[in-house]
Image (cartoon, rainbow, N blue to C red; front, side):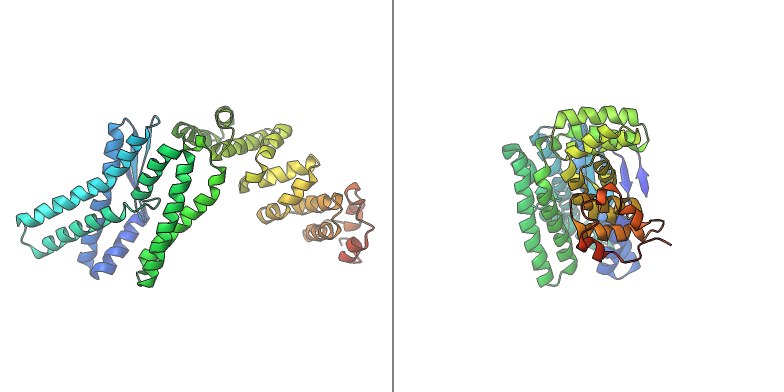
Length: 383
């Protein structure tokens, strides 16, 4: 990975070079041609991203550019921008690309160069930037056209506008993916299929998104709190997560803050508070906190929640403890067959006497049921 520091930091990921070389070789079938195409791709992407970044600086933001496998990405931090400023920042990427197309056109018509390789390279630069500037304005996220549509609709309809832009992007991307495959442009079809999937997946998740999720200050605060958490500075992380949770009340940022608070309290052995935080977001709990909620739910005799989390928790954390707590919870709920099944699963880890275990208070409702007894082998003592 290459990082170029400066007012606009530029990070170039290895996959950018790999994909650029691959595209260049597929087009030119030669070493020289490949190198020329890598240069064309690099220049085109940098100019495009500079359009975003330089405009962001004008609006007193702190931009940074990343060159990744499928192109470039410009992000910026600063005070919340009005929608029209976001629109201009986004639009100036394609505009800079179009200006590069015009520059290449002027150079070609000036007859300044006569070398056929140079002329061919400039011609390719011209075509690429015209083509990409147009394609990039299609209303498909994450392309600029999709972002422009999102900003426009969001300025009118709020969070509903974001959802509409995802739906529109999905339809356009899906149609273009089908056309790409139909006309045997498989790479283009695959890219648009990926965009369609991303839009659909995001649209599916938008039911959890609230207005506060579009607040850049809160997003930045969440990012800073996560850094504190990763660096094990739990006091500062907790303070910031608490502030975020009070300002949000709902949405993805709120869910993330509550989950981190639960994890911090659990590590601090404040189990009651940890349980309260995680229980508040039980329907949206992420994988890295499921075990904690599962364990605390059992300890707080919330057996229905243990039942709800049982399979997913065991898939993520296949331990005897999880299997045994599942068995106990199903038994309390008078679900004999799954209780026996989880008990056998727990026995597979060894060091478990089922005869002794099934005499625990949890199994009082099921231990004499025929379904429970028949599901267990006759000799259930661990040897």
